[in-house]
Image (tube, rainbow, N blue to C red; front, side, top):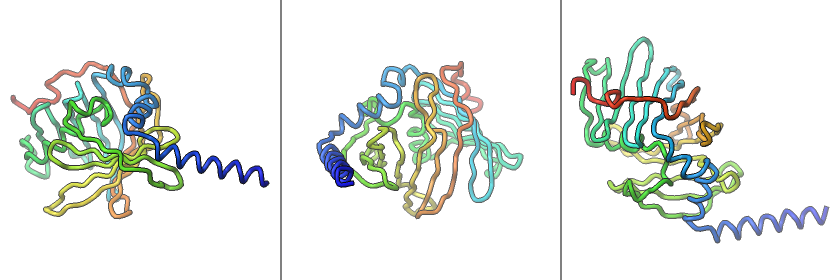
Length: 239
């Protein structure tokens, strides 16, 4: 028993020391390697994702299209209504039956949010190309696991905190601040159930919480990579 306690104590000391000595570059490199490698990730040019979202007691299905790390479209179906949110690489647009049904150009703030969603490779792949500034903040405890916290600031000055598991090196949580109805809010996004798709690890489950309360649960049922997707899928209707 004494030997076991000594071993556990030494392991704890080693983990704490390693956490203090880690650098941002090592966290990024280990994360990319755990996901399948930077080269494999960047070989993904298109993605088509289908799944379900549960929110406020309701459920909707969705199909998401992504291309060239710059374009994104999500089609959502709920109670017979079809809702579209898209970003064509320059600006966003949406279509919502509850807002008249006609396609509408997005506001600058909405386009900015859509632009970040179009980044299908992830934060740690060529962050300079997106104007991201990354800072390693330190370690935290997340439900008993040690995680590395990295603050990612976008060109508009908004910061997203990314948490990387110190054992698996995969991202397990993101914290984002955003403005809703004129008020600033913060959302925690928990990523889990990673699955190998074409040699790259993807989280198939994302649970979103605000003030400790779950507000949305997203389940990816299928992920297809490098399928043919034309640019008109993302274009504003009639353009």
